[in-house]
Length: 344
Ligand code: ADP
Ligand code: MN
Ligand code: MN
Ligand code: MN
Image (cartoon, rainbow, N blue to C red; front, top):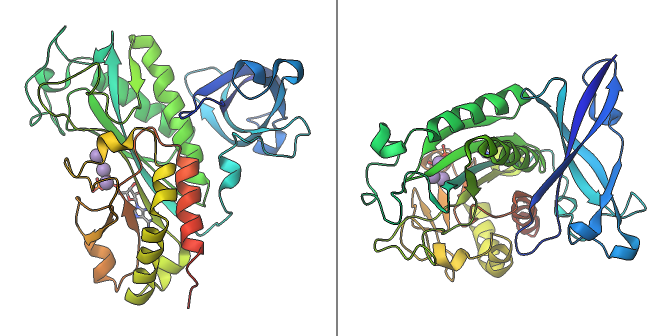
């Protein structure tokens, strides 16, 4: 028997952006616990905008678990928030809104900024670095600074140790901006992994005095930058069994008509402040237009060349979700729209 440190992670009730919360409980197991070995737990919902003070208990239901190589006998436990009865999903439980579909696959490209002392990492105090250009996939101290690479390297290792299907990382267009990609099979799988990968990154930043800025256009407002800087997206690549195996131009066009019809419902869950990012510039489409195009990074949905070459089969990229979007809501909305289109 060994004592395991179970880190229960959940999303709080803050709007428009839920925060990650977590706490540890110690439990004894003969070996690394399976998901079904992990008990439900509770927390004070009145401190997380999930309950009133008088009846404050909310329940945590484990839905996925990962090894935590940063802690001896550590386990990262992703949880859904449930009502006190333990079976009714709490209104803030976005995961519970995703249709079950084992054949649905998602690949999320998470962009974000490192922020230190209120500015993007590597920005000179009170000023701005050289304009965008050399930073994307850049190398060298003047392009990526001195600690960003150490953090992203550690992030890769901790994710891989956890069994998270992280597919890659790259330095992005703005200074201090990076990306990682997560892929998963099953309608909830990639989003579960994404939340835990975000958690690992945010926690890692503590050691370096660095915060992760998930907001989609941080170089506006307080940073009234003299030059225009890129925002952060969470491009969402998706496919279903039918899209991969059958597809076809006719079905594809019906699908795009459904995406166009439900444009507002998609934008509603694609992250706050997206009007600042979806401007039609910086490889985006305007927030009030829905377009699709082959290899077109200025469209709402990009169709990879491979999709057309295979006879309209494979995966599609929705470029509109932003870096702060909840991947549970994104996956849920994409599948709900797909479900409105009958398969022949
Ligand atoms: P780009 O930056 O050119 O848009 P990336 O290589 O960063 O492309 O991301 C492509 C994403 O597509 C990856 O996250 C990958 O996991 C995902 N992907 C690949 N095949 C599929 C598929 N069949 N279904 C869903 N997602 C997929
Ligand atoms: Mn990418
Ligand atoms: Mn990118
Ligand atoms: Mn992309």
